[in-house]
Image (cartoon, rainbow, N blue to C red; front, side):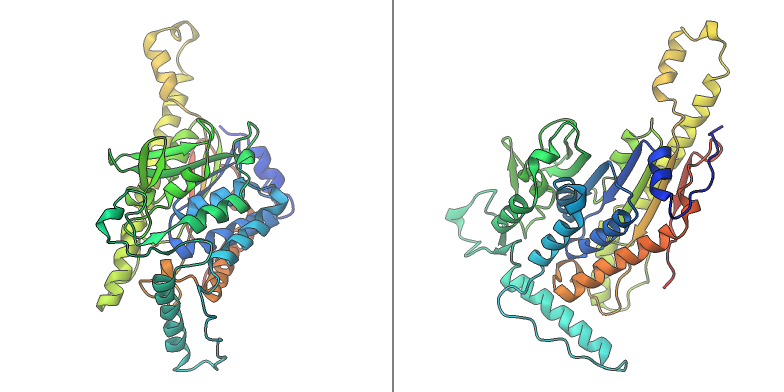
Length: 392
């Protein structure tokens, strides 16, 4: 049976987390412009002194992971804000100024129109510090894996190199970092992890190289595309590799697997994206919860084996699979704004970015107001999930 601790209060929450969990992981899904929500979640955690020691990401989640891990703790929120303000600037000409409207029939259509216009501009003009249209992308004599795309992501490389200290990411005392991509030649998913090798700017860019918009990224002679093509969340890796340690996991999703049945083609496109990129987070969670319970049962059964029988081969094999670890998982999911359309993942207006960021902060702060949820699970319930945090 796990040792019972007093319930943490809001003032002692960070200390309780540090005491109770060997792994504190931040798991960041892909979702383009929606990724500012993840930055808001991180700022709320940082505000109460909860500092993850493992950050794992896919696509835009990998870029946020680079900013977090590649900066000192006191500068992470500042650098996240600088990153998002950089890539969400108007491409060429300023956006039309927002027109203050009283709540009424025209407010939502106006917001929808402005959001759609910002997305269209991103497609046509690109986004500063992120990507620019590639001139004549269909010319056959320019054929190359690193140029076969509609956009050139060289500006993103420059932005990351300016805002991220890769020596810090690769230092032996650094927080753990994992990012996922897809090997184009084999079609297999690949994780790049700073506990297994050096991470460079290419590894983070590979995780966000979504075709056909963005080009493949070459790493050590192999070419990679966005990890979201196979799995849009690194949750499985984190849960699998932390199965022997008590873990607190914040899974931050940008797409909701659940939603309304669409009524028109625009809603069909939006809903299809939600389903495609939600990456079966619930299925992974349920599978890993079952696995953790089985490992715990095996762990408890092994305690009943007499000492003189523990040298047997079957016992030694069982030790490999048994685990007494406890997992507390928080699942935060971005909720669509009423004015957003199917283009929400490439709508990079500053106004939408600020709203996404604030939504992440609000959801995490609502969660933090329930400190009892952070109490370490017990042996009877070794895997606990929290899915509902904040009411609209």
